[in-house]
Length: 311
Image (cartoon, rainbow, N blue to C red; front, side):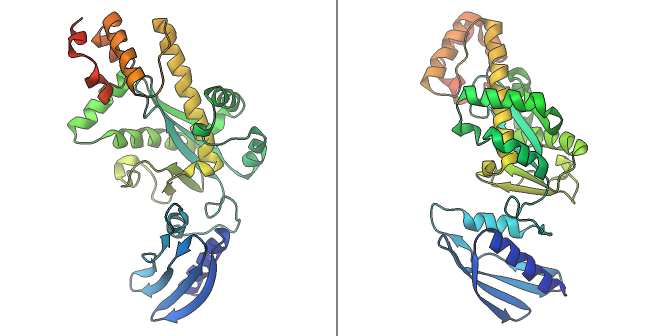
């Protein structure tokens, strides 16, 4: 079987896994054209064999507005090897899933969690009703996160920055003309690499947070053979959903610790309530202390009365 036919067979598997039918396969110069049939998808794709090897033209694949099937297919089609199992759609085998918490919260840390899941672990975790942390209450995230860390700590890696260190590293990034996404990618990479050293995965799935991939850079430290998939709404995969819950659990834990230190309750999120709380905090504890509990580059800081900083 030649490489072109092998690629065609792999694509057929991907399409079947994602419930996309092939209406027609037409032979064209140096390849094939596939006309696809799916209620949320329009277009077709082409496979070519040329001097530089096999090329898959996905430019004509488009999702109906409000759906994401084309994005899923485009990501899956970039994989070199398609696993035989239909587990986790086209991302079969063992997975490290990654997600973060605290990125949009003015007070508290930035936390990234990486979670390893294989077939056996997935079966064990089904009873926990794990889903995206944003769909769960704080108490539920706390309960599930605490339980998973106590029972499955070896399959989890957490990288976190408390506010003072977060602000220091953010300022360093800014001087290098980089942004928060670069800092977030660095934190994700730290967690992934440590966990992958203990449990090498077939695939890494990251909940996409940047239009431009920051994980294929040499500075990320990943092996070229490691498959890294960045996709929106990645919490549909158990490994990523578990990572989102554990990251949120750890964020809540650190926020509680900070609250205990100052004998108050820091609010979550951002907005007018948080702005007012921050202003009161500065009045009582000083601007310098704000650097130890908040992400001071947020617009929230600029909205605090400048006069309060001099107290």
